[in-house]
Length: 607
Image 1 (cartoon, rainbow, N blue to C red):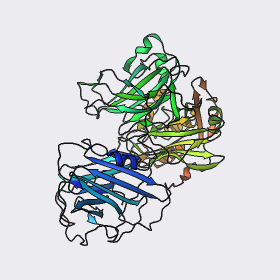
Image 2 (tube, one colour):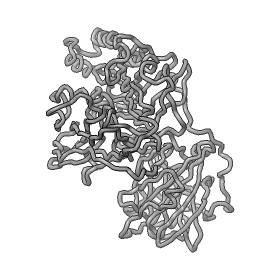
Image 3 (tube, one colour):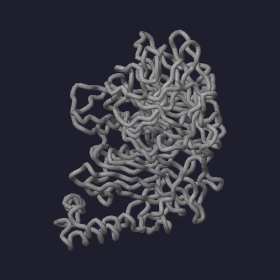
């Protein structure tokens, strides 16, 4: 019943809410669910007990609703509605089967903890299980949850008299099981620098990647980045899809002023920065990062980090013109020394012609390998601790994970999102301490759906192309910066020849352009044998690996590495084990109207 649509009031008040100081101190995570900041959600997860506690505070004296939805819509959502009337709090566990007033769930398994209404602001705190305990409930899944919310200005007189929420409703993707602490205190000497675009013109094309070099403040001794936030220009939220900051080591002269679309025309040294060593990453829906009080990302002094490359992805499917942009990343830093130095590592699939997704396929799983040879060469003896993760794909992505193996045994995933949302890609802090040691093996795994595509999809930078990456921020800083793989050339060409010989695709030659053109003619839906051969190609264990540091390759790229045996078994992982006992509530513990709905209010309930 995780979808709690706490339909708050329909009142439209002039002023928005600010985050409540007491609730902010009590709960490690908080988020305004609406842009006007009239609906605030706070939450904490007890991973041992398998419970999640919510506090909702809404700018209304009426009812509020919060729900967990499969897709941001009302049908099949698990909903909670509540209000405060005459000093008493009421909370209802509801189930939605359509675009109507959701029915009261016969099994009430949410627990009201507190309620208040002050100055026309309603606050409810309640608890539920993370895992669904009965058929009408929805579990809170690993990765992205889609929350729906609503409210109205008036309290109901009966369960079936909740007035329609009008425009006071919406939905938002949220990572509820994130281990992040959002309010890390900043030191007294904190400063900031904005690494942003400089009034660049957003071209009227669907996808633009813009690359700009930026020089960080210069210090004779090292300073430490301790966190960052996105700085998105007002009005451009629909254009700026993601921002990635890369380290640049060897650029000088005119290259320090590079400010142009990314691509083949970039100066060589600037081009080498891109994708080599990410310093920070943010994508739409994200909230930035805060480092622990003893960790910093050094720059200036002898750190080697003086200049960065800002890569901004603009998504403009309607090809609007006349927009300029000054968005970027705000880095918070201190001149004080930190005990541990942090850095970023990227894992994933090398972008190239050998990653392609046939059209009209329900689930295509693409796996890439970081072998033990690479972690042995690139990680310190005591290993590294994972601070944050960011999983990244484009619009065909459905589920992403970074799997972790040690001495032949699979450990819990380092990162996982079973409900990937292209429009919500946020950094995630592991729930429990996660360490990667020399000799560990990692597998980046992305599952795509192309059922709605009539043409094949290739790997690339465009929104309608695909990627498969996992970015990790770790400490202490290792020499390893990138570990990506792809099928070996022989494995790839074997499939190409098989497709050509059997007439599944038409190839004029084996040059890179010819391969793209030929693979675009591949139609696996029309040839059962082609489909079988394609999935066999994906499951082939032979990989070419590019394991790199700032100084070059850590292992020979000519080596052939193999995936661990049984990698396709895909073990199921549950975030927490939980019993369904203890939160089924009677009227003594939960204020619920005794009436069951006889008639649903069918009008206007669609989210």
